[in-house]
Length: 400
Image (cartoon, rainbow, N blue to C red; front, side):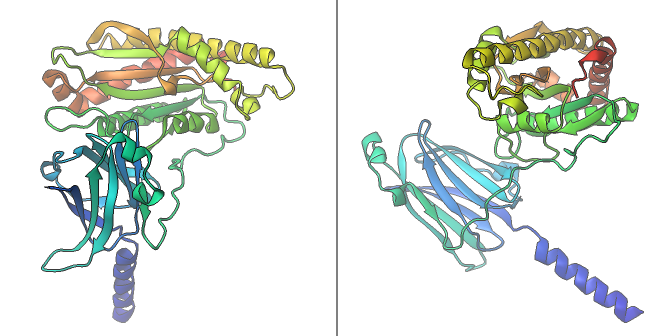
């Protein structure tokens, strides 16, 4: 028996090591006369893909999925041609580093150094500043470099709970979208609190409360710290056959006196432009939730898409009013708390959508409140009540 236990323990240790993700423990930026050097210290030699992007100028470094163990106070500021950097999970299986540049630059060299003198594996990326003309005329090998072993192609980071709705389940589906994620941190407070983490914490709390009521099926667009493109968020909502889309964010403002909760819905101008754009897509029938537009003229398609989006927008406006009334009883509101904007995540033509700014990270008092689990529970409870009230008033809006 002891031998079996020992074997199992050894196997568990082996499996843990075999499947453990490599980690990045140090990030350094060095300025040299002819180049700027980025160095990542890793627990193992990585495969990589490095490429440059213009407008704005950036260096993008894709790596296998990594654990980032770099302390926040050891993340370097920009130097040389590098203005700033950010990093995180880009998609399932792929981590990404993005270097924002002060001017155009080209790849001078990329290589991996083996462990030496107590240092682990090091990925070195050298970039050199150039003119706009030189960037535009550069050969491909100065704009993109990859390791000999290719980087595994990343798959979309779709949460596991986006599954088909069970037959006979008449509950409305609420899609909660925690803003930002992965390589996109969103806003950052003075004390280092990042929007992507705050939004996910609030989204999970809202999901918990809605599911506890038993009245709703709830889907998160992301359930971990991973990047999602804006259009992917909408696509997840459509895959889930959502009946309401709620995107959660926390704002920053140049005036640190500004604070308060607010709700955004789609503006009329953006709605019209989006209706025209949606009409050109090949999957029009899916977008319009059951309308087969493949044999309709362009004018008819535009009209049907506009009507569908107008209905969803009106329902979003109605829900926003309910949210303001409910949340206003437990939290401070921004002046004119219901606002209109052309956020991409609000542009589904079939799902009523709102974007909620739960508060301002740039305001010290509000940031402290937003960190409080008790306040998070109270605020999300008010939002959950507003969702319940909305569906009591609009039971016929369950499209699926």
